[in-house]
Image (cartoon, rainbow, N blue to C red; front, side):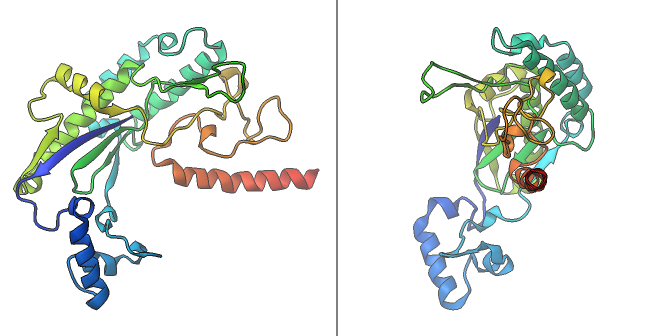
Length: 294
């Protein structure tokens, strides 16, 4: 779940990060200066990071490089983390899943919640992602949601699209975490360096105060996914609704393995790309060994 909070700045020095997106004329001028004599407003970023030089020229969105993402544990997010964990343990998980779901899915859901709540109690495991590069939008992401979505067959025609339901905020604790992360970033924005450049919240806006108002705002501006979906072919025991075993083989099917993010039962405390690379490396070894055995 991704909540985009927006800001503007009354005293931002030029060039501001947003200028790279909002003023193509300025970007073209600066690229011309850079190509002619390797100077200009963007030269120091381009020369200091060769990865920003693409096949078609310098990447003028250079401000996106560097340390722009932080992963916070729940304990660092809020002092009320124990209350949130206790609240989650009292939740009737059957009510957070589609009606008539197979009992193995429910059992797997219970096991996943137990594992995630252990993460919630850890000082080191990220449950919240904050992506901010000094621009106009801040991405606040619930990285370890307890809500579960579903993908269900829509008809007897295999070519028809399935029915997707992200199940956003079906588990009440996800909203508690979202409110906590929103409050945490407001504390960050109140720090002197950001006030010095006139950083001001524009969406939802400074008038949104109190948990009830914050919850209402979050429900209206949150996207169900930030393109890190997992779990549709989870590596779990069959009694927990699993689809693949520890060797990535699909239960009940011969010669079929799943090697992508869908085999992860839960989202890792990071972006999924590097984890998929690791899974693919391991899968290559498993599949080659399987082939050698015949």
